[in-house]
Image (cartoon, rainbow over all chains, first blue to last red; front, top):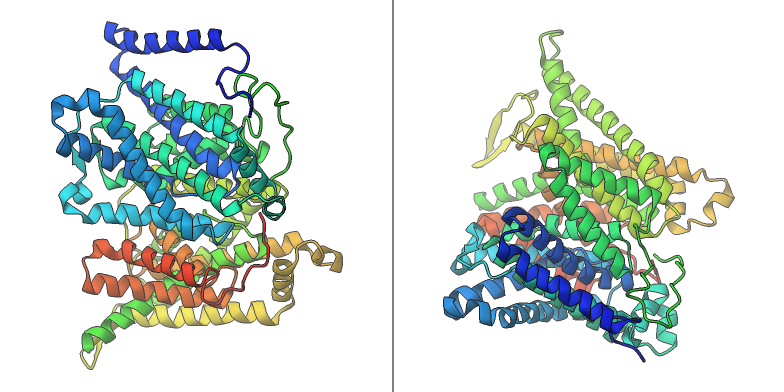
Length: 326
Length: 301
């Protein structure tokens, strides 16, 4: 691929804008302009964007159906929390935080590899079942290890995640996944979605490609888990059930499959909408899914499915025409 | 020994419920190739329909005997659930039949959440138990306790499953179902009313879930979230048996019943999910299409 820099047209302008936002992300909370609640919501939006983009790589770009991403998130969350609380001295926290997150992500990626290797022998709905089972197993294992709190959960993390860190990780995620899907590997992933047999015939190593995409995806889910744990400063196995995975699926399909722009939209809209619906109490959990159902019936591919904004697509990429996929 | 026999009895009781729910997953999957994730919540709704109709029938109006109330409750729940499922199919799934298959799955997840949370918001989270319509009598045979409830559960589920199996294998409707699951493009050309058959499938599958729901409700507590856990277990049953295969779903249901009861009997109950899902993964590695499932030939989404 020729151009892999993130701003496809105006690198300087984009870099300037991104830096300006970073500056704001650092300064605004410091100056007390953003209150804690707003900061929290912004951080959740960011974490959900990371999760959604990472799940979209498997479900949207590759066309497989993974339903257990909360499991990878749990691994990242637990590994990074254990590292900051038990392994490293507390005072190192802010300095060691990126490393800790990456280690959490790597742990999740390793788990992704272990799940992917046997499960990509089968295809279609069986991946859904395997990932579902994986999610349940992770939750069950976490509940049964008493050293990390068991069902009571694990706490004691410092509040290391802040708006700036979330912002930086969102940028890293967008950068990496965007360059990944527009690379040759990305083409291979798309070809698997369109027709696996045909992809194999034009000498795409489908097995290796699928495993690679799955591992990258679980890495970022792990990162998001680490960020999540250090916002909430408390995690328990129940935070990472199939309900959490369902949330991620909803955000992916709301925003649109096979689109980073869609993922950003989906995660933002869903997170903000659920916050706005808070006054409805329990009913917000009725309204949210109901809107999703209506959206699915009227727009089965989501808001921004299979398209990309000019901002994110490489220069030679004509906005991809939506073709039918399964 | 008595302990083992007792546990086998409990496992058969629970397994019947799983098998009945698994039938709905497997039938819909067989015809539409779609995992109907809302099915567990349809089962949950059926228990509430049963709860309210039994409470209503028990209310002073007519002094009906318990058995008749039980049968009526069963019928009302089956009918109500069947209508609900057909309604959902018509409104939510039918428009998506030509859409990417995953959209239908997401819609089903959404419908499940709507059902679950509507129940939670309107009826409340507290667990309830179905009114006692069947007099509970405990027999003791050779030291093994067996209650009338268990006998009723085992007999009714056996009868219902036998009827369903006969419908699918012997009637024209059943033949049409099998034909659609075999090839959906050619079958309409033979004059099979595909839409009607799909509705019948949903109606049959969810009335099976309703039978399971009532049988579950007379033995255990019901709550709005039960659809998630029991629904997943039934789904796993369908997969273990070979999804799309009706007899497989029954076998899978009983296997899962045995796994759950025996894990709970010998290990802390928190290991239940772990063991069940680990078994599932091991099974899928060796027999990717389940115990009675057919190998899938090039089923690309």
